[in-house]
Length: 276
View 1 (cartoon, rainbow, N blue to C red):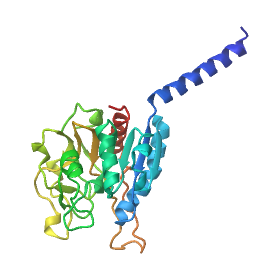
View 2 (view 1 turned 60 degrees about the vertical axis):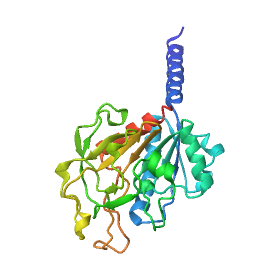
View 3 (view 1 turned 120 degrees about the vertical axis):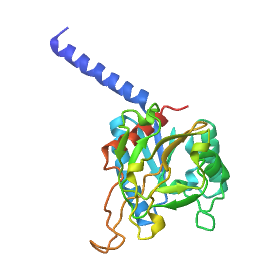
View 4 (view 1 turned 90 degrees about the vertical axis):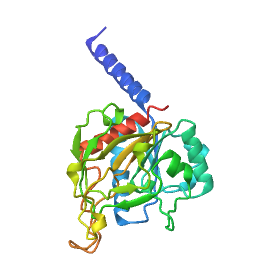
């Protein structure tokens, strides 16, 4: 066979092999978002919808996003292997039921920051027991640090695929860190993966005293052993709320501009994309 033909054949076979590998590892991700409340959450959503498509191209999966929560139905979800909640949660009963059935039938989910928020007598009350008590296990929101600040995080489970290749401790991006009603350590279904390391204290700058944490145990990334899911407390960019720089609520930090933290999120997506 002529030399040119051999080279052509090699190129064709290599292309087919590469396509086969990408198809074999490929999965589809759909991200739901609201992007209306709190400039920090809006900033994160915009950042996520730019970052995830780049990661999808690099790791051979498909990323779609929608602000239409009515798409949270069985027919639409059947197209996707992974669901993301970037900021909020579904509010209508039919949307909630569709999501619960999706997860109970082997779907995968990752939620960020505000997607777990619930507080009685607020716009987002704890009126969904399956999601907040059974699925997330956290119950209601209890308090937070302020301002958004970095924290040193420690691995609580070094054997899980999500923490693979991560150092035992690392510095996270600035974030508003949440405390929860329930102690997740007492829930046998919850697998805590990352928590705030004690070297972070005091955490927060105030101005209110209760917005600065001096001690305690605070999980920030965890999974539920009964579902293919992971919750990540990150997702609140630092914002120029006081207009020190200009009048436009300028973003001062970005969630995905942290190599180690981003590796954890990529690990999470690849683990979720493997299915049941």
